Image (cartoon, rainbow, N blue to C red):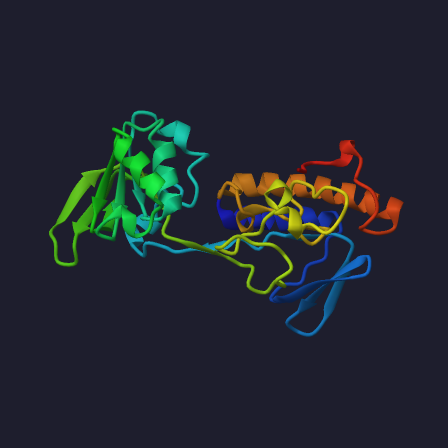
Length: 288
């Protein structure tokens, strides 16, 4: 099923359950006012709610190779590796990127793949990767590193079968067999519009649940698993730090977040506020 069709069916189902939609509007601010949360829209209107779920996603830097973009999801993947790794046993896998996320992905894939090749534009891994990861990669026998190299082409019959690599700006291109390509060259979560009081990591991804620093959580009760540092505001999907960057995972996180939203609404109505005592254990989907 295509992403467009999935979104269409989700819209149809939500409409049946009475959801309202504001298309072609941009959220510009989110703030708490007493027991309610307010979202400001680009046209000047404000929406008020007791619980808000942020599922704004992230934008991933693309390779810009048309033949590979056509195979997105069919051997070419952007983001995390968790959901595909086990299906790549005894396969030849390539990882594009020279940062920590690329290094971590390569090491994870190496547990399953026959060989993992990292394709790094820089002249060394040390240019953008933590020293401990560089040492782990060097010590892993089935991980190869090709520095000063870029992916300039590739293709396959309905699924990725080969890549075209070029060493240096003027180097000769070479075609190599490949069963999968993971591209981790940076992502930007759509969180720039949020207030600074909502905790994020250094890349802008939202911190939730156990990942929240103790000084970022203002209440006595524990934060729930998908709850941000602003009580009553949840996050799901690619915008959340630690999420598996896949559609199926994002849909699952959305379902979990809605269950948590019901717990929060029940709690708020019982306690008439977001302070007070800790939420009962049966309603706590996470916590420190």
